[in-house]
Length: 135
Image 1: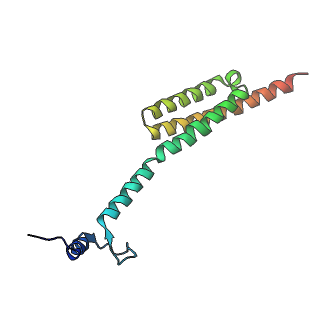
Image 2 (image 1 turned 90 degrees about the horizontal axis):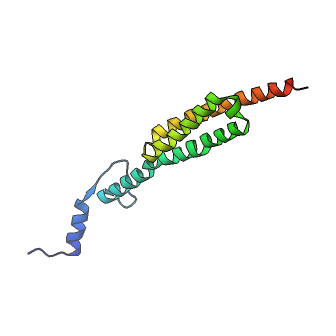
Image 3 (image 1 turned 180 degrees about the horizontal axis):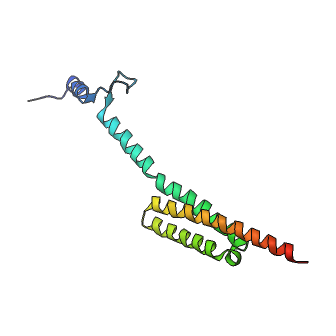
């Protein structure tokens, strides 16, 4: 019959450690398997959240703001193709994010931002020409 003593537990701990070479623990040069697993799990959780964060920045932030600015400049009337396309890309980006396809949603958000910028530029140009023509 085996008895669990402090010496047996200490021996068991030493056997369950892995030497990682350059990854040295401050307590003797070894890193436990449990610590490696915890670190990998934490890294996976932290890095797995990048898609939604970038989606929020791109779609809910930049693309939606660009579309609002284009509408404020009168792009619905002066640049209907670009404005409508930007609006539809933004809608599609939100739809894809609802299905957790964040990379696709980010790409649609970039297209929406680009087209909204073009719509705003066209609207400013046409509004400037219309103001210059008025006596």
